[in-house]
Length: 281
Image 1 (spheres, one colour):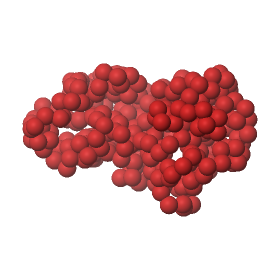
Image 2 (cartoon, helix red, strand yellow):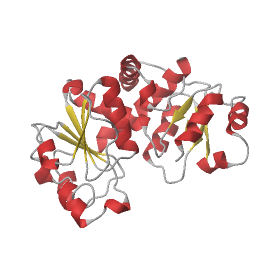
Image 3 (cartoon, one colour):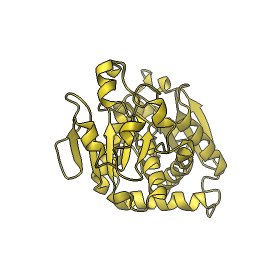
């Protein structure tokens, strides 16, 4: 089984991955990846995702070999590349800007291909974030999620998981940034303060340079004062790398609304669960 995007998953798939994650956190499972070898394609700029995949594989008894993603941009056809890799590896984890590259690999690879981020989506990150939220809020499927910022891979993956699990998801930005038609799961809005008033989880992502304007930041930067408008016990989950003074203010990160750095600890175990789940299916 490949994991290329969240839309391919069912609620049961996600529940199974979350249950595997819980058992891994409790050390109830042994070296699930013993004698398994993974080929990883990561740029040098990747920090959290690469570190947790590498450490997660090794701590479960597996091994990995790392290549830069440019390795996949050679004249050799991807179907030939992955067919050779399958002789010596049990799975492929790839971060590449082109989602189409991963899809092409998935069409031909006889071993699992796992998307570690593309310019279109970031499934492992959002699965891990939702798992972490579920550990803080047992009613996580009843909460209202609000993403603030332009359409991008993080916004898109949150919208996808909202659709799969029927979560209430608001997308707030200026201009024409809607990801989908309005539905019970997806609402596009431009009024930040009014939307925060109905929000339990506030989400952001790094801003493209075109949005680093005084007008945009004055209207849409998440500050502590604005978080005070949200529902009781609201959480602020900015996707790293976040930039203080851009999508989030310094005082918002310093506040109790910020989920904190330990929030990401489960990224390692969720990715371990994904690896084993894809191998086992």
